[in-house]
Image 1 (spheres, helix red, strand yellow):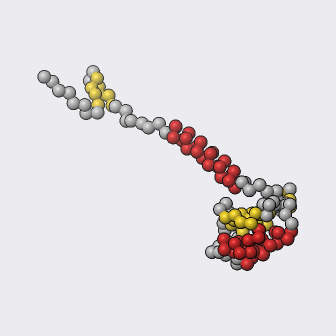
Image 2 (tube, one colour):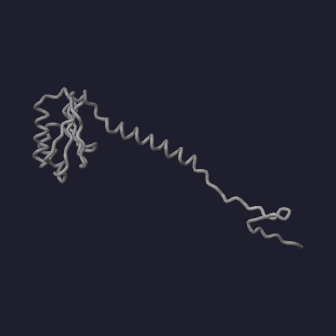
Image 3 (cartoon, one colour):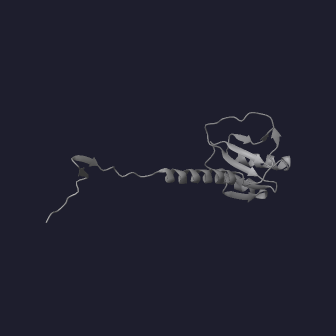
Amino acid sequence: MSMSLNTGSTKTRGRKRQLTPPEINVTPLVDVMLVLLVIFMITIQAAKDSIPMELPEAQGVPQASDKVALEVSVDALSIVHVGSDKVFNLALVDSELPRALSGHEKQPVNLSADKKLLYEVVVKVVNAIRQAGIETVNLSVQGM
């Protein structure tokens, strides 16, 4: 009776043949990750532009800032949006907006307001932002 033991190499006519190490094909993994990246990029852009709004047009160059700005938007129906979470009516802006912005006094605020809104509405929102202690208010416009 004979017994054979595999030691990782085999002998073939006096020469040793090395077994190739196992390899993992990462191409499908990279493909899936690229598809997920594209999906997330599209989703984030869609979520950012989810508030329908026409900005007024103006000339100028956007300024770069190292601070992360908070987004406050007012749509054509005078509904105030803080970021993507908090939503309230313009009638509550004097009480709710300072509460929503508390703790963020050192951050700048980007205010986007629909161009169909009255000037009075925009001033009311800016006033509420200033009452919250925000030092920098940026007005968003559409480039020409």
